Image 1 (cartoon, rainbow, N blue to C red):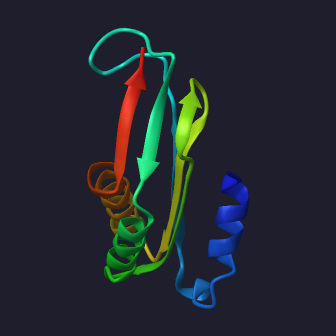
Image 2: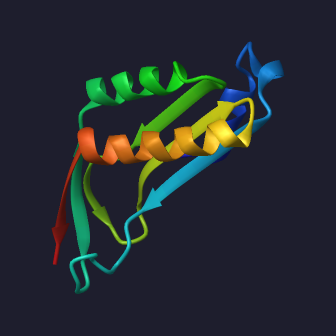
Amino acid sequence: MDMNAMIQKIRSNPQSDRMGMIASHLGIVRENSLKGGRVAGIEVAFDQQKITEIIQDTISLDGIIDVLVEVCEGRLNIGDVIMAVAVGGDIRERVFPALIETVNRIKSEASTKREIF
């Protein structure tokens, strides 16, 4: 995943003249489980159709101009990138909450994860 390329793609949106901010999220496999203990990695899968729905919901929010999501599936090791999300919009008071909601919804509605110990 190339976060710089994602940001450049959002900046090339035809409505970019209305954009005052781009916020991004880069999820990475960490070695410590929230359940306690060290993990060797994770196995993750994503529902692409649900991600598309979430993106459309986010774009429909006031002030949001563009949303890009890239995910990695399968077995991932510590330090591997899981998901990249970039949200472009008019002001930070709209863009930050939209980014957080998008990431949270993808994690809760469009992904399954299994930690490998």
